[in-house]
Amino acid sequence: MMNVSFNSLIPSENVSILAKELQNISGELVLKREDLLHPAISGNKFRKLKYNLQEAFILKRDTIVTFGGAFSNHIAAVAAAGKMTGLATVGYIRGEELENSYTYNTTLKYAAEHGMTLRFISREQYRHKDSEQFLEEISAQFPNAYILPEGGTNTLAVKGCEEILTPADSGFDYICTAVGTGGTLAGLIKASENTQHVIGYSALKGTFQKKVIATHTSKTNFTLKDTYCFGGYAKIDSELIRFMNNFKQETGILLDPVYTAKMLFGIFADLKKGVFPENSRILAIHTGGIQGISGMNKLLKKRSLPQIET
Ligand SMILES: *Cc1c(COP(=O)(O)O)cnc(C)c1O
Image 1 (cartoon, rainbow, N blue to C red):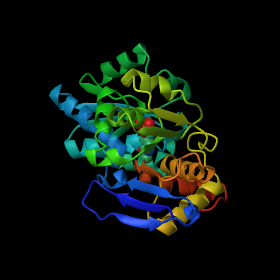
Image 2: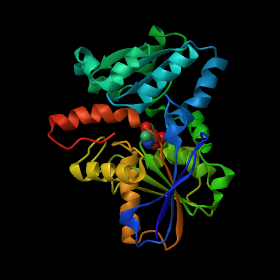
Image 3: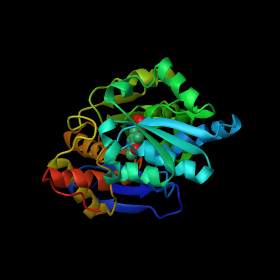
Image 4: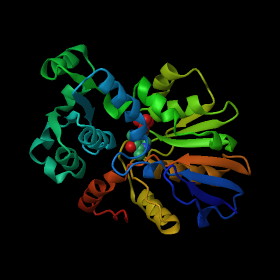
């Protein structure tokens, strides 16, 4: 019988739970509760910001400038981190149409309430956000800014993500994570034992993140798949919602619709398909992202889809 248990970095109990769906599968599935790591800066976003914030202070910068979409966990995390540390924050948001209605968007409202200056730019401008010209414009407006790329992925972010794994995790055969930009996956690969295999479940179409990973590590003990991306970034259907609500009812644990739900859906499906050898010990990382649920629920309501139960 499949034992699903949970460990956490904040002092809390490990809970063993039986997943009914996996009754006939032998092995172990453990969820690392990175979502509980910090009350405001959830999961991998805390890991990715840690050394970057340190660096901003070392360089005596007064402002963090970054980029994201309307539901970005990274934008929410940077806003909260800025408020906590006294750094000013600026978020360049994809979609100028949001300018007049952003207070209806839970994530952007949260960011603004935490002191973030929001700059709405067109999708076309957003595509060129990493260009020299745009970065020069930012530097001209915010001369003492520390610029973080979209999703917060850079070398210092990967270094922070390496700390997700501890020596106690070395007994697992598989380490699984949801993937956006690939920074978290890169950190996990770097921190993994060579005998372990790291699996990245992409939350978006394609496996282009391999390029990012190759810039951070030459290790190859990983697989990246987009089999369970549900059509693309932030795309979600009633099957995924049903899975999330069922998981919540059975385990008491909330998943986020953009990342962790797709990863766990994928792990469950792969277990049932026999992708993992019998008696595999699997560690799945709950990277957080719960703040995105209320925004997603508003969208689901508009589309007459079922709500994510919280
Ligand atoms: C941002 C995010 C990810 C993706 O992390 P990357 O390092 O960009 O791949 C995964 N899960 C959650 C909950 C996130 O917020």
